Image 1 (cartoon, rainbow over the protein chains, first blue to last red):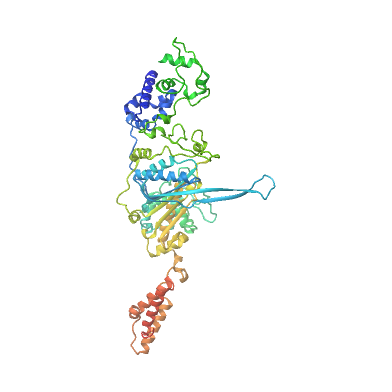
Image 2: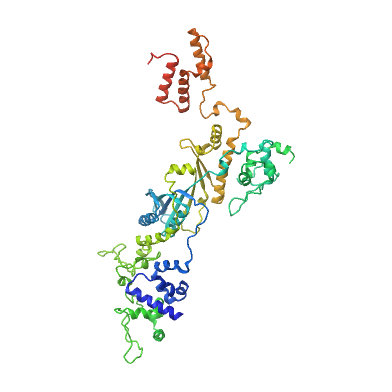
Length: 287
Length: 338
């Protein structure tokens, strides 16, 4: 096996020397799988010189599908604003050329490319460690900016473009990406829920009943002594790394009747407390 | 082939040890195939021994072999030379670049051993040809923007809520940036299902976050540690505001004139005064009692009402003042005056 690889590598080298830039795809796949090259230091030099051709060949190796399509709807970005900052204007010029070319090749619509004015931070420091107040040295730090605004991108396209741009960000350059996502109005804002509540109970009582089943969570992270909580105990902000606390189980249906949106009240149990801070009627009902 | 390889390695010369990159079996290929190389010549005598003759190349000489720049064909693929970001290599880049401050009566330093050229970031791996190749491969992962949403107005009509988030990319001890958790939610109140009372109540609840000129409500949240939490909180705030503004509390009936956002003419002293004046005019002219509703509905009073409302709501402008003047003249029958 080693001899075969060695012989193949020599042949490849011969081809390169003759000046053919491209290699037949099947040849590379048969001769030099990637792990082979890394183990065999003799062939490392050849791997480096083959470069992108070998990489594009490996994409088809094994016929693995690289693009997968899922059912969830793509997010829509009305505008993507990429601001790059650096100390060297020439580097930013080159990077702008690259980013604009990449956007054009991927078919994105560029709204505008402009150069915000540079900012110079200057400081005057003492030149000497001790005394010599009259002798100072001055430094300045120059930050140059470049802004590229794209419009009408889908989520997948934005992710692809941004990852490509960010992987090729030069040393000493920072980037800020401002994304403007557009969304539909949430379902629970379409209509006010007050009409759909059952008329038997006053609204405050219904909500407090819901409150008593819900996990007590105050979203603003401050326990307010003034507000009486549902169960008469202090409530604390629930830190979870995965995001907002999961909604509590929905209250039994016979109490709610035709409540318009279980999600709304279930996910935001603090709403009851926020709407009816000091509710004496609830306590009077003997909860 | 394998036999000669081992014999070369067994020679164990110091020069070979000093050049780790050249060690190994493939150096044989390099040397043998570089027919016109100026490297170490064949040091084998006719008798077949492998005795090294007088060294024709000085020791520690890394310039063995021809630099790659001299072996490059003109029609090569440059992305094979610089496939990824790499520092500037003078033996690989075939350009006669000079960089640096020149000494007296000298040109700027050449590219060989030039630290200035190595220090700066180069874009040799991102030539237009390479970028086109990359983008052709990346195109499969991109999706198309829906053609029905070609203008901003259509986007607003179908997707009224706008969420602003910022990502930060920079090098440093940490890749995290605490400013990245800020989320800004923007929505136009005209897109929400609000009646008159609800809209006014919402504007009062929200305060500075509403801008009258653009009719946009802006909610900025950064109180949660994660961006998704801040987004959820922003949506929650919007929901609460919407539903709260539809409710009418008992104390809202105590709203005074000072709380009103705009001037409403009905039941004001201005209306009373106008009616009073008109009635007195009619009485002076000895006309019988005209019902109040008729007076109110008459065009003169409508005119006057509009001009007063304009003045109070929009302030005093040339236009508004002249309208008020005309309406008062009509009211008091003073058409002759200037």
